[in-house]
Structure formats: C-alpha cells, structure tokens
Image 1 (cartoon, rainbow, N blue to C red):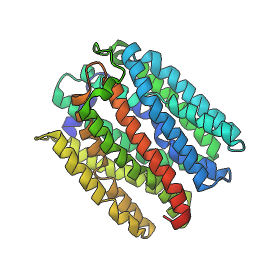
Image 2 (tube, rainbow, N blue to C red):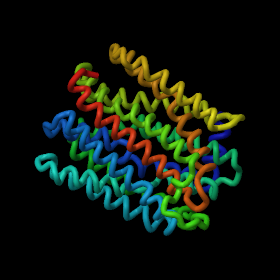
Image 3 (tube, rainbow, N blue to C red):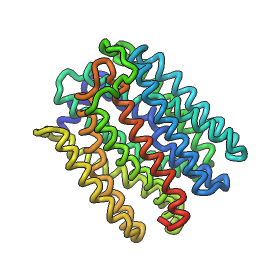
Image 4 (tube, helix red, strand yellow):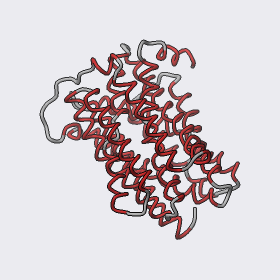
Length: 363
C-alpha cells in the first residue's frame, strides 16, 4: 500500500504540488465552519450563520468554473494567485467589519467565495504532465482525495484552536494568509508555469456540453447537500455536548473516516467500469449516513460520523477518473472546477437548509 503512494511522492514536483494545493485550499475548506463560529461569536443566529456560509458557497460555486475556464485559456499563474489575494482580502475585511451591517457582510462573502482560486481543478489538470503512467494518475487522484480529507480532519481542529487561543476574527485572518502562501507555492512551480491546456473547440457551454459530465455533476449535488447539512447539525449537537471542542472533533471525524477509506481505495488497482463502481460507493455512503439520526453520546457520535465519511474519499477519487474521461478536449480545468462547484452548491444548500431545520427540530 505504501509503495504505490511513495512512488507518486518521489516523483519530481508531485509532493510540492500536492502540499501547496492542500494548504492553498484550507480557507475554502474550513470557511463554512469558520464563518459559523465567527457569526455565533458576534451574537448572530444559526440562520444568519447558515445564510452567510451559503452566500460564500454559492458565489464560490459560480466562480470556480469561471476561473477554471480562464486557467484553461491563460494558464495557472495569471489566474490563481490574483484570485487568492482578492479572496483573502474579502475575508479579511469581513473579519474586521463583522455582521453589524448585513449588506456589506453578504457582499464580502460573495467576493471571498467567487475569487477562491480553482486550485483543485488546476492540480488535477497538472497530474498527467507530472506523472507519465495512467495508473499513477489514478493513484494520484486517490491521494488527492485523501489529502483533502487530511485537510478536513486538521482544518476544523485548527479553526477551533485559533478561536480558543485568539478569536474568531483572528482565525479567519490566519487561515487566509496560510491559503495565499499555499497558492503562491503552486503557481511558482515549474509544472504550473509550463502547463498549457490542449486546444479547445469554441463553445459557450464549455465543459458542460458533455452529457456524461452533467450526469456526474447531478449526482454530486446531492452528496454535497448531505455533507453540508452536517456542518450545522453537528454544531447544534455540540452546543448540548461540550461546545466548540466537541464540534471540532466531530468535523475532524468525517475527514478521518474519509482518509481511512481513501487510503484503502487508492492502494489497489480496480477493474471494471468506474461508473458502476461509483454507483456502489455512493450507495454505501448513503447507507452509513442513516445512523447519524441516533445522536448518541459524544464518543459514539464521533465514531458514527467517522463511519459516515468512510466512502466519501473513494467516491470523490472515482469521480475524478470519470471527469477526466468525459471532459471535452481543452476543458479539463473547467470540468474539474464544475465538479467542485456542484459539490459546493450542494454543501451550501445543505448548510442553508439545516439552519432553520435545527432551530425548528434540533440536530
């Protein structure tokens, strides 16, 4: 198992690109949690917190394919770093101004979300130029999905640690500075500077003219809804069972479960059609979400949440293979960005719906 991953990491530039993308995506990955904690620290309601997080998520969903298409047209350095700086600036101003005036708060959330750099799509577009064998690329996709789960495991703990040591505004500032440094590490690397998209057919739909890609995006909208609802429901649960520390551990448990599942999935080669395999993985993902409704004690709840994430990374890794196969020529970054967009929209919808539901009926 370790040999397959070490082979990837020993390839020149691979570890740097993976780590830089991971760090660069940290602000986006923990934004819903950080915004929820910030709004609650400012005295706002769950509904307001969910709405602001949803505004960030929806604007991020719009921005990812737009910026992804620009990356395909103009290259990574010209798009990724300026976008990272603008996004961080929007979040920094939000941290200083707070929620006293709601209209500016929503505008800043939209700016921060829209200009989040499409580092995910950019990395997946780079893998074929860094790794020369197709089986290595597929393993890298699995490692990519696992690395995200490391971030989703460590990120919530880092957010709650920053809030505990300093404050919720300080957490927003620190995480976004870290994100800019990660984006900078990626865009100055040789593969990112040398990469050029394949020639593309001019079409206003871009990557969305692929029927297979549209089917995949439809599926992951609902996966995102389920995952996004946990952000708010777990906070409500944690408020009655230990507070912010419990919330951080519950959010980390999702990533831990996905990390374990992704590690096992990526360590072997899979035969058969990836589309059929994805159907099985998503069905298992759904089955393991059902026991969360029991809301037992903290230790048992953390275990159930870890189990609910077990098939998340394998599902995401399998979807990467399908995106790569269905993306029209010259639209690979945009296609991967659309997957991020759909998933983010789903999470935002789940977060936005869960706020009023939690206030009405509890976790």
